[in-house]
Amino acid sequence: MLIDLHCHSLPRSQCSSLAPVQLVELARERGLDGVCLVEHDAFWPAKELAELRRATGFLILAGVEFSTDMGHVLAFGLRTGSGMFASARALFDASKREGALLYLAHPARDGHLRVSHDTVEFFESVEAINGSDSRIQNMAATGLARGFRLPGIGGSDAHMPAEVGRAATRFEAAISSEADLVAALRSGRYEAVTL
Image 1 (tube, rainbow, N blue to C red):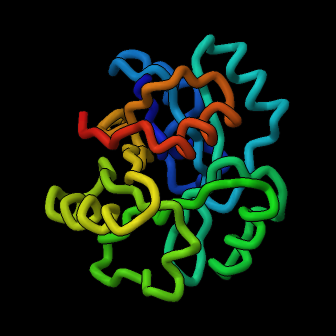
Image 2: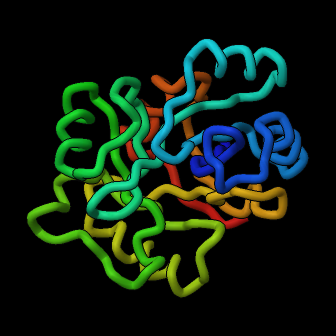
Image 3: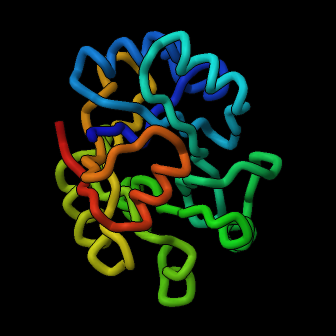
């Protein structure tokens, strides 16, 4: 399965120009099997997400992209909290309680990697391929991913139509829910791909 693990939509991510239905239509046209909405510091209510899945007939998953003192962090499987975690340590503690997984988003974007020997434990891995980053930034992120427990993930970081489906994560397992996504990520049987 080919799933774009890093998509943003209106109105939950004000920096995006994509309505959720438009995002799904573009993802379908571009050969994706699913998308993951990781809004900035905001959870998707389960009921609204289920309604969107029914209306589109497409696999739509949800995570969150948190803004922390260590940069942006993609969280999968975390379903409680305020949506705001300024501290990566607090986010890590919450993820441990819920069995969620954390990936450092676009880790080479600003040239200041915030991962140290003391903080590497917070993350399962990094976003190795980000469709909005340069080839050199993605090469650096892919190299960084080799130092973690799991492979790096891929996502487009889509905020506008042209960005949808630039990168994704290819999974061996069939995925139909957030629980399936977390299990597939935990297995390590996936790869980040540029599309």
